[in-house]
View: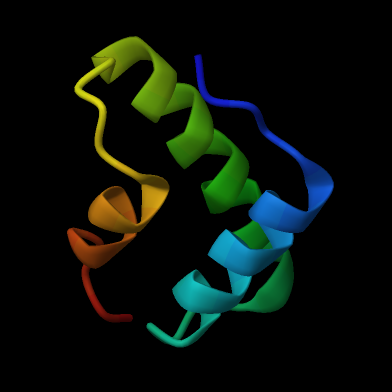
Length: 56
């Protein structure tokens, strides 16, 4: 099971921000991606899902 730690969410949020999303929006998306990753359960890191996000 992947753990959503504060630092991991911040790190993922910064990666999402680099794609052009606003700070608050990117943090909310990061939490949702961690939740999605747990349900997918494919062993991939959250960066895998972030890479699949469209540029804004």
